Image (spheres, rainbow, N blue to C red):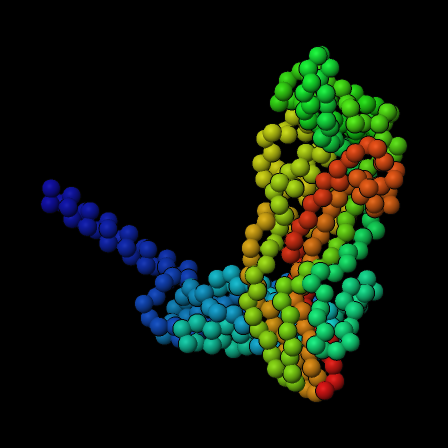
Length: 372
């Protein structure tokens, strides 16, 4: 018995030694020693206007052991946004007035230890005439900025391969009830003749006939269009070299209901109307958007996120600034981008545009400078 007891003790000691060894070798372990130094770094020294860069912080204790840190991140100078994620932060160049030589400087703080500031260069892009027209220059720095811009349509669209919509049907076997079911208008890229509805959750429906559907197939294919507008999150004034740094909360992602209804209307999976999971909806919506509009937009369920925004003033100027989030809206349209529910081409068909708005896919800071 005594030998067994000793063997158990030896085993426990050995396991503890291995654990301590691995913790020390692999780093990132918790240390009881105080934090002595913190270094922040990024893979690149410059980013393009609108690009996101990951910055990481590494801490060491008084004996040089690597420790996990979750610092407070801050933009010291420049115009951009910063989304903290533990020991990492995502820096985004979000200004629309970058010039050659502009930079963004970031710093991290933890346990009264300040990391050496990290400066990232910004490579400006040419201003878009469309974007410029969305944010006209105020007559004075005290004029309000638009809370919501006009939208512009991205001129890049393809017809959808599948399209179905809710239809209202009447029972013609003596009853007086009306009900709603799915009716297919386009299948595998082909326009379909009017026919019986497909109502999988009600089973067979031989006595249902359309009562608000015009005669004949659709006059032409249905397209997927993409429009963009921006919504104001925060705004302010800066005098001379004053700076602004604020954590802003806003909505990112899209409504699960809107996305699911869109996928039901445009997917070939007719029988999945009652069982779509969010993962399937996300994949189907993302694929459809990229195939039909050549636009790559991150699709996620709607949630509230926070980012740190920063703007710095300049000598002899008053700076009027606004923080905006981009809203990408995808909808079913005619060939000209007009929603199918108001398009004269599809008049009397009573179609639904199945609009899906993806919020906050991009954040940007608009600045207007006025001489003192």
